[in-house]
Length: 558
Image (cartoon, rainbow, N blue to C red; front, top):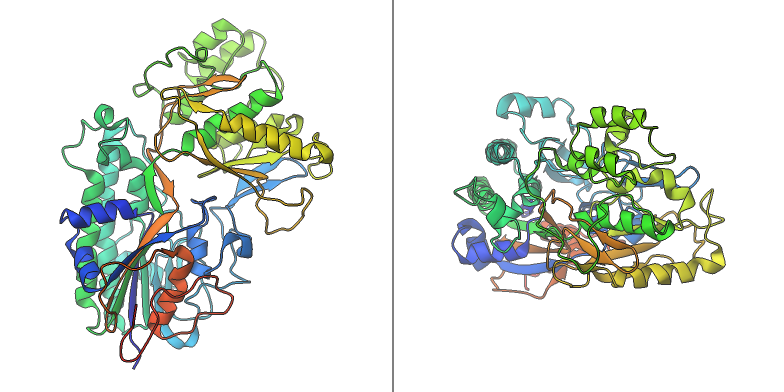
């Protein structure tokens, strides 16, 4: 007889939080599973850490094998950039299918799996984009009528494509917390419904709420965050902990509903910590490269001189984050510079037109990009796109690490860096970045820089678009930086206060799993082969990970 597996993902749930809250008694269900089963942390790849974890999980393959690094695409012929995230063109799984596409031998139920695609090789049911964070899929199902049936019966998820909040907007933050709790309750109802329909060989669902709230509640939850004291006055409780406690209770009810001989896997492929990436990748890096290519010019956030006090963090202002950031655009004309921070955008544009108009070319505003239908209007790097063909190197839009593209002659349509200069430019940028420091602490901003190409003209389509990938330091959230020769950038207001770390965890418990307080650290590539092994299925030879738990008779041996 097959042993059913119930696999539950907690999207971007960090192991340090899980461990701390289990020890404090806040997560009794997970604590019980850990005590009765096994627990380990998981590593993940160090760069493109926000864009790749779910595809890695689904295929059991690294990005270098699938070629899927990010949803953001770049065209070297015309320097256009766009985000595939709202379509099914992200990763099509034609080369490596989702691990649960097992054909007729296994009955499988998949509910709300992010970054996936409906597969005709799944014998069972699939429901996508019901309430997950970053679904990368339309809201649909197989059987086709199932999605609407579940919505009619249990309700829609209030956070689907609506899980963003400004850190200074307390009413919206409270609304988001309440919506997350509502979504968890409805997700539980759907899971219990699907579990009652039949005994599945694999039941897989993901709690996406942990991802959504981690980004916006991190500063409210973690007392060591620099914005905790300033912006937490509107909450009497820890909203991040509330969400995790609700999920822990929901998992307990799912376990109660599951077959007695089932095996349970609770996991996360990547984690969350202080947001040390958004401002460095989205603002500091594109501005630094602009100043590097155009010495003496400034695009955004010209700060006070290096070595002077940087001023207080920007936490209280009239405009939303994009609006405030655009008002930090530098104008050589001091009158315009003053008016930009005080006038609505339309009024300022009128005044600027009366005074002679904006320079050409110029940074393109997020409001213009949004009006034109750009999918990356909120990505500050895209504001510099009019200059990319004139720059030695430019920053590509990012959801995590810093990505630099060299404007290489013979590759880019208007490339200006000669092939024989490529190494020197990469080295010059590397040294420039290693000397960037946090203006408040003096600490280096960069942890590691990786060159992605051994051959500068390598046309392998599975390589990422970036030539250089920057891993930022992981200790402090930074709002202002000092650079060598390019001056100070910032302060910049924080937007999301939590960002991703390449670490996760696995808890496994159930029939035949021998209890062990801890086992050796694994890798997120091991998740798919582990689940398959627990089901009694053989992992495909192309998978790069290995089962963390090996089957044996009569029990699994760690």
